[in-house]
Image (tube, rainbow, N blue to C red; front, top):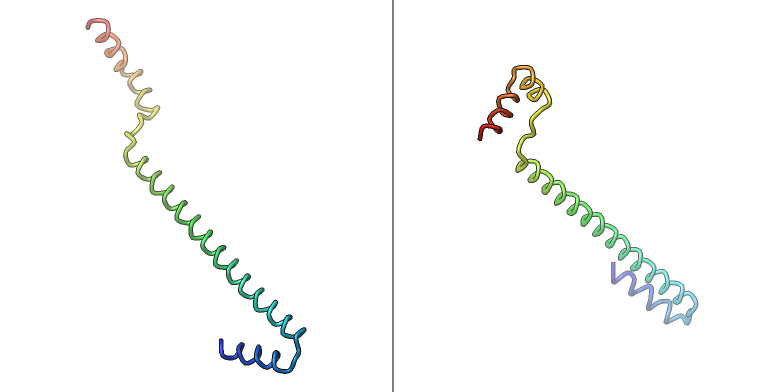
Length: 94
């Protein structure tokens, strides 16, 4: 591929077609710039995915370490069965 472009470049310069060579050179530069921009975009996409994965992992760790919260139904059953009144009475006796 490089040999192909080199032949085109040498042919344009040897025939004294400087304007066509200049157009060719600008086109080649544009191709390189577009390639770099695509590589940067892919890199940014991969970095965002890594960050998202790290956040997800941290949230999973927090969720695993978090103690279970008592549900409202257990509090309600304590009130109905008198469980909470026993706790209150034990607080006053201590």
